[in-house]
Image 1 (tube, rainbow, N blue to C red):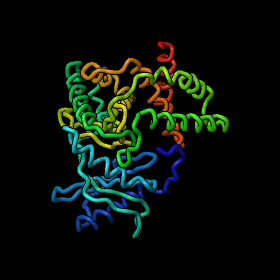
Image 2: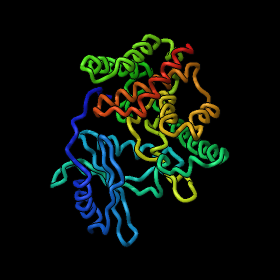
Image 3: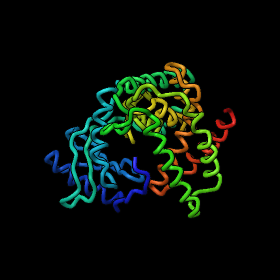
Image 4: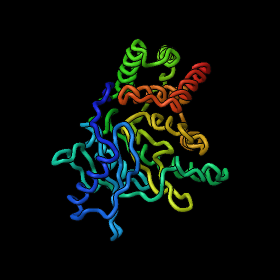
Length: 317
């Protein structure tokens, strides 16, 4: 994974809606009767296209070059190994012909993100535990698919997990130090990172034996629920790899994830390494700093709890 800022294509909501009409007509032979902005982030914008016939699709526009092939590859790979629906990819299109960004079309997953299904937060413990059982079982099915080497799903090259992860983590730390010197990262964050790095060999002392396929971004925001709050799908993998399976678990505690016992349930069912909680704290903090380096956007509501958790976990070693 490259540790550098991504050059983002100037592509806004209005442009996405207009381009979705054109792209949908190209691939479905008819202009959609309705388009709807579904959401966007630093690197992507999703638009729903709908026809009176009932046909629908989601078109995702990528605001950076070099992302299209991997996103399509990873969606197809994960779909083959996940018992919960992951959207099928209908087409992939490189930018050009009046469309300024790469994009792809995929199956519509009914419902809305668990993160915005606020009624779920009020559900009883029994329901929330059932939800956790379903999600963790699905994630474990993905983890059961393994590779011979560790690394990116499209080109895994490392025999050992730390041969892949240690250089990446060091690159993130060095980039964070440069941001701190430039006044763009706080003293609190860089101090915690230095403390964690000093304990790297302890935290990662237990060898990772299996190169497991991971989703890379399975938090409550990427779990879809439909009528009756039934799980309808999993979306938006990010940086999927053959990796330490525990790399997939830190996202479970982000946002409202703790309310659903996701991380605890996975560990209870499938076990964990000795320093699992310290690893998850490290993975979570480093991932968020990496996202900040790449996007230039620091999300305090996510970053601040990760910093505090890293401090707590270091005290337990």
